[in-house]
Image (cartoon, rainbow, N blue to C red; front, side, top):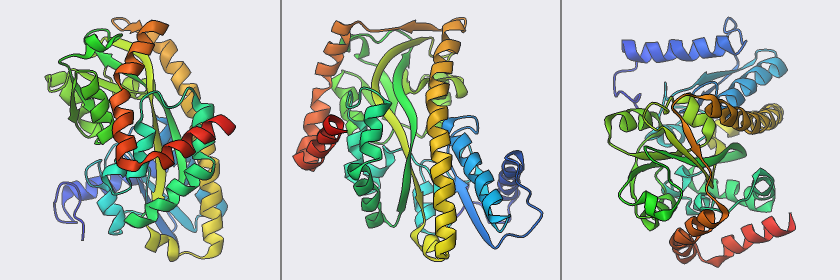
Amino acid sequence: MVAPRNNAPARSPRWLRRTLLGAACAVAGGVSLAAKPAVLLRFSHVVAPDTPKGQMALRFQALVHERSGGRIRVEVFPDSQLWGDDDEMEALRLGAVEMLAPSLSKFGNAGVPEFEVFDLPYLFADLAQVRRVTQGAVGRGLLQRLGRQQMLGLGFLDNGFKQMSATRPLRTPADFRGLRVRVQASRVLAAQMRALGARPVVLPFGETQRALASGVVDAAENPLSNFLTQGLAPWQPHVTLTQHGYLGYAVVSNPRFWASLSQADHRLLASALEDALAHGNRLSADLDRQALAMLRRTPGVMLHEPSAAERAALRQAVQPAWDGLRRSLGPGLLNDVRNALITG
């Protein structure tokens, strides 16, 4: 049995506090907890409630409550209150939570290396290209592969494109040399930073702010909405609009939990999730535009936009990350992705 993240007994005050926090989040989403549900679904994630993923989870919660008449209850646990980056997938496999939305970068180390294709730098030009992959045959095939690791893939969610933040502008490969850059646990992301002359430091998302504040790392890559909601500006005054990589999530469930449901409940949950994901994707695009406008007005934050020549130099410098993934996965998946981008 998986213990809570603090490894305390199930009835410890901290565990009870987490349970109450989850209940408070459910109430905030407009869902009454008075009636005992026939089905309880715990949805844990690691980001703030006001992010695209947080809002998607709350929309899913509300839609399920509405469409099931309260018979199915979704309890949302944001901000790593229940499980964090380092233990959420194990918790899902063992039935300690029913639904997650991990970053796509996490699935490589979880035994599905094909997901590392999403970490390739400069793979996508815009979100329309992302959708050609995630909402087509390639995306469906990737979700099916999650079954190998006792996870049921249900859909994809955008969080937008990543930009670099640091204590100095990062416009050229030379600017990266010697920096310690926080990255997710991904071979591709680590290879990308090493190719730029930086040192990749793998840290859970929830520890990023503290690591930047204490000087454990010097730089980070995030969508602008994450940069704002995590309050990174005091330690990262320079934001370079590199648009170098995509950050998205896959919503996954525990297969045993899913198999325990009726076909009617499958359809209800799948329909609610489809609508919630569409809402989250719209919100992601909107928040990215709003975050950029807000950062332009934020005192002390300096935005930098690389020139076409600087972008070309960055793209060339990170080519080793592409070469490494091609060697480890073979050309098949990369060809499928490129064909999807070309044909739509």
